[in-house]
Length: 230
Image (cartoon, rainbow, N blue to C red; front, top):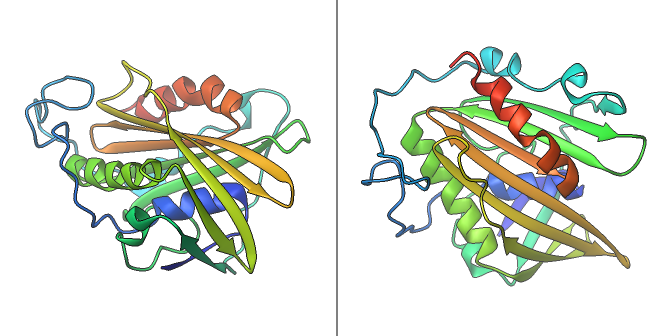
């Protein structure tokens, strides 16, 4: 399977989330079932209409929200490298082409990337809006596929990258459903650890990725701003 992504740790991570969700999921905690992952009754209230991309943009964290030391990074260039996934049948079974730019394929979306303190620490926030069941099904299947492969490899632009994935306990009490994972990218004798946490709140999906400490520090703040006017 080949996907097209930017050849950075966060870009490769996001590319996996961009794959169409077409694998089989047998879990019983989707919004269409009796309860969601949080144990709340699913579909207990009428769903809000999806937000536009412009509306989502206003709900992203900015530098004033994050505090000093953060610099917003420009959008990644549209030029992408082919990435081949090796040793992970679950990801291969997803099939199809990934969307360019490392974003999920939902029609309403917004994204911001930040670097911290002039170091290699980064944090990325993505917001999506769609039917709640579509959001749940799409993000859940991708997380399940990735964490179902403890180790695998990707070849990005001819460079082999060893991958390790670990499912993490999801943060309880935030939104309607939550997912979290830890990914380790290793190449050229160096390793990068990326934490990725997703929270669905009604028809809104928040995905925060980056250095584990930064994700933990800003996740609640990102969710509060994203859902403040919901």
